Length: 370
Picture (cartoon, rainbow, N blue to C red):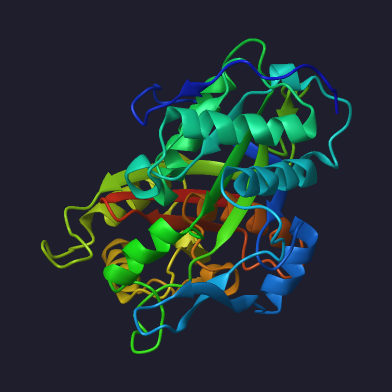
């Protein structure tokens, strides 16, 4: 890894900022820092064994009972510096297997928590980013930036990455997802809304913290004879992604009919140029809240052809907790690891994610056969 000067730039991307890309993506390497492991190898072993690291925290309910959380052990740092540390760990893990590279030519796209949820502003995002890359002593491409779209922003972040890969000087893009629910303001807000898994409420989630990094390149099919100098023959390709908007709300003010997620799945399948019958598994962001589980089940029913097979279901929140914007990149990192092993759930499947505000997304993953 090249060591260069401090970053002095920052961009803020929006979901509508890019055209529809033609570049197909491949996962070159990945890293993960979460409650069950400070690196992807450790976390993968724990998640395959269905382990968790849930523990009682210093946050308390109105009945003075401790809130269960999924957190890492470090207790010497909190706030921005803590999240920056996890980002640095995830990036270092991701880049540990990468050879000598000029990272000044590699844009970094950070999929971050929504400002309305985290209370963050542009200075907050820039500060966290700067602290993280300063720990690594790296400088990234000037087109680097943040997408504060939360959990379901994964498809938009991949679209942004694909657009950046079409730049003449860009051969790789580093996608980072990082988020934390472990602060008093966030915990109290979700306690007040009755959404945390505490005594007397099983229809809730366990708050967590995590960072994941995925190094993306242009992909080329294994049997292609085209020039692959700047493309990846990685085993795992991202062949499609789609988004949708769901009018339904978790509080029941508007019933969910799963239309947003249905649209996202169909769009992703169409982009991948695969038939739905080719899908063998789905990776769900279900976190313990029945609203999202029911919505996903309804969407799957809508898109599954008559007589279609039941897909294998994979979840990660039962191991690492609810980690917000880090969920999608964490899924990509985890699946890039297990899909390359005999334990793979299949050759092709998809991820799906949902936001509280109605944004839905789906992403198609497939193993490249050389």
